[in-house]
Length: 417
Image (cartoon, rainbow, N blue to C red; front, side):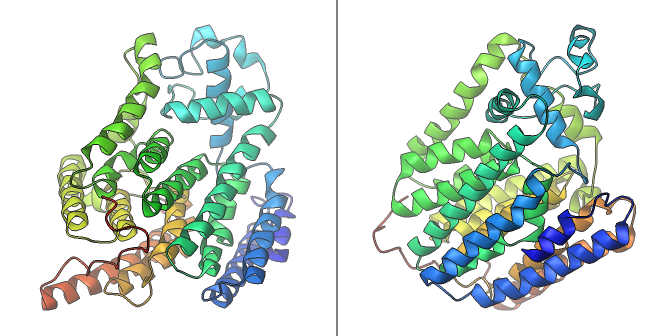
């Protein structure tokens, strides 16, 4: 909390990099100690402390101008364009028809002037609402992002208790410096994807398959990649729920498709031409990465149909997606801070080495901003993850068993698939 306040108090991190880096390291070490102390606790006092510190650690950054990313300004621009009757998937900020919108304060902060929007419909709705709440600054968008962020924390605590896991583990998400930086400071919409995924898992564990399908659809409508998680959520005899999820996504896109068939805007160009902090994609290329990811989705479907734990399957799929994606930004990694606490044996099971690698990725994820310019930063960011994956792979090869043993059924869930 005090470390977060110290970091937020630095007027210009770009002009004081040593002070900013030092404050971030102190914040990270403080968070590590706090997470370790709360990891096995489940009492009310621990939960109250967790939530209070999480809120207070975020507060100094909400009113602070983003430093590492300017995406929040683009969010507002797309929302403003939609409110004024322009299709963000078709019309780029530098389009001549946008001339009078460019006269305001916002345009000077917007990157990618030539590119139309890549954000799904629920994002655009949030962006438009944010512009309505505050059209003179970032308070609206940051408030909405923080609502999603703290919703994820609240539901994570409930999901942990539902699974019989100490609620103190939620500190991994609530106190994570990466989560705080990317949501409270930078205002990334990823918070709502994380929240929707946690809600989907929580409702799935309770047996609420329709609610889980709707929540998963919400995650897809914030970030498209959760579409690949549908087979993990709804394997065998649950095609109706999978179709419910898909139907909601299609209905959300339908008004934009009727407006103009080009509903993916700049997305296809972004995926094909822009690479940022990629790893396996750099080696396999686009076609090879797509083929391997398809195999990963099939493997997750098979594992779930054999009784593998939902969260483990989701974590493995998200990990495969990020390692095979052409661009991996630090805020993409925040999802693991919310998912890993939900795995009962995350630090003791067969996948322990890989899970530790993921924990290190959460800790070092901020280095993704320097990954393109510094080989040392990229190695530091990814080395623990690949070492952990190698250890698990060697264990699998020696034991000839890939999928972990099925997790015990939850108390009120005789068969939710």
